[in-house]
Length: 346
Ligand code: 13P
Ligand code: SF4
Image 1 (cartoon, rainbow, N blue to C red):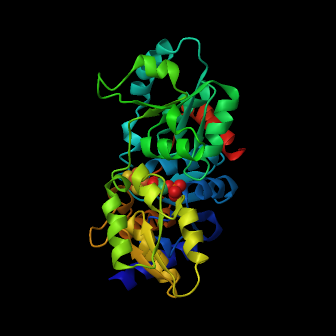
Image 2: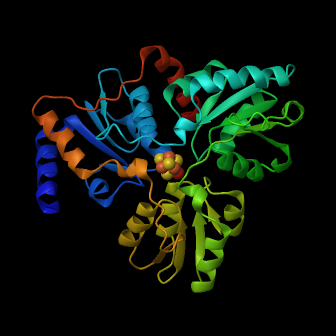
């Protein structure tokens, strides 16, 4: 069945030729990754989308990535997401309406401060547009520290959303661990106006449900079972997990780390399970161990991109039908693009 589907995908790609480019995130399944022209992290994918000149960009990833690709490609290019169900739960943890209300409260708590909002790439286009409208920008896990520095050169405080763990890990990296205050929009007790007035980094209380499940106990167990293991984790992991690891970085950094490992080294991978599986396949000379052990850390949003859907959207294009087009509303596009461009210029 897989062979049959692979043949269908290859045949459709052959007919579509240069009209189509397939981009895939590092967390996509093997059956998607093997058909992609470029496989990378969120930052690399946004650069590839900006450089793409194909008429159709087929995105193996989640909605916020496809939206960003639509924003950053030309108006005559079309972005297609093989499944409309592939939505990152973290992106849904900071809705623009909710952030509007919070912004009024936060700016009232610190009336004399210039606050610059930064949103993680893992957010919807309307929130990216909001950040640009208030002088802010977008960042990914590979440039969050540079985005924070950029913002702090232009203002007194940063509001970072939605990922509290990336926010905290970035604060540590910048030596600003004492400068953070949590903002929990779901908890009336979770907001302290005095602290907001005092601290420089206000961190929204969102998180990735995949990375939050990694614990210090996982690191301890892997070090016990593999005494020579090195541990690399994603900065969406909790602070204590990052502290217990040897290397921290975006999915591109995780890939580079394993690619540069000496033969025979053991690397434990603290991120979504598919990337650990790809790394073992791509680098058989390195021993790759998932940090989660048997407890599989699988992102259900990324998993929605089933190879059967990839075959379907491609065959529909061959038949002249555009399916699952991702189109950002025109009124959000310009500002969201500004927020992304500020990041690409960092
Ligand atoms: P990066 O590939 O930018 O590290 O992002 C990780 C992620 O969770 C994407 O959803
Ligand atoms: Fe969202 Fe986490 Fe899945 Fe990335 S791994 S798409 S942040 S839920």
